[in-house]
Image (cartoon, rainbow, N blue to C red; front, side, top):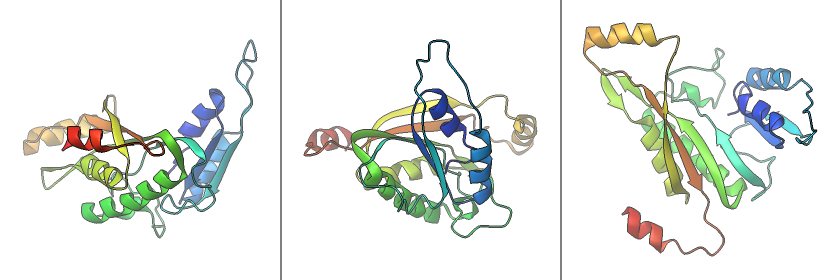
Length: 208
């Protein structure tokens, strides 16, 4: 779910190797285009990196070896709030209307993230919520639960404030007309994959 490639651009600029996967070929083409630049630092302190991209499904990362990844950083769609493929690509999670179905599909994503990530390393997921029929729908927390169920441990929940969005004036007007509060935040969940042979009872006792 590399989208427009912002994360891979940052990897390149900060000296990290990266792999970008997206089910939408247009996203991969855009990402490759954005990565087509060269740069130099004053003291050459940032090493050259390799950024790989391929069209694929986050629920089946078959081109990535088990426990080979140091960090996962991704920004999934928030169910069908914004459809990312006009041609309705099969398997595109931004076309999933049911939040229950979306959470189940995200559990498959979580399983693959868990598989490819090295033990005691981190997976960062940025995701937000939505409203339907004026009521708050906790997409983020359904996603959180999907990742916990496959074995991840929640290290942090960072609240990201949304500001200067192009759609803000529209939603300000709608919220006043229909009497609901605006959603002004997203969640950045930082998950950790347990280390090998790590005893997890201490986490379970503190969380449940």
